[in-house]
Image (tube, rainbow, N blue to C red; front, side):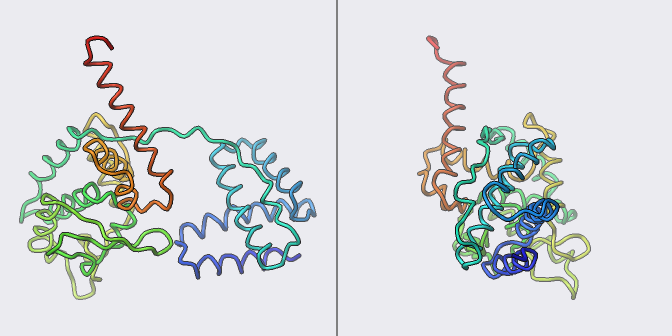
Length: 295
């Protein structure tokens, strides 16, 4: 079987399903490595070859998470080929990825985030449109729990100002409506009225967040913003996903329903959201051990 052509077809299939370009690149890298292994050894795509490929990855020092990701890519590819009759059986069904030790997500305390927002609010003045934008960005990330890529992709048309709702497009081009509160609403309004127009040019897109050159703010710029702000707190330097983790954990800490948090985060499986219940339990345990007289 000529697998290179099959891989091209698979990538086209992923694109048609709305898979993000970054995910397509990851599949291309993983499966390209697999195809090179098969080609070097003149091997067929079968279970023995897949297992040998995994052993080679391990011998080369690949981490468990890397092997698990590549295994997942291979299983998805073999399933695709089997469904289209290119393989008489699916070897990926019996392929087992290494079990991962799942660490608890890093969460910023409410006090730490109060420090961040207090500092940003001081900087967010009509004379400093960048400060207005930065406050708006962090308020929306924390208020909604959206992914940083979802924030970077927002247009003004995605905001329902009257109902305080924002429409985000997540993985697989799935859309969901997220509520935001009074603090985020004020930061958003100030940015739109006082800040955005200072950066807008005739060539600017309808992006919600604009750079000082009138272009859409990218993920990398947002990552640096969050990392620099959190670095000045006890949380330490951490990326935008920490704000997402924090939003979910704080919602549960204050009594939010787990399924509501699942909807907010856009998780396909409730099991993915349940990791945050473990975070809340750990925080509860720490408070108990610190404060209870018989702990």
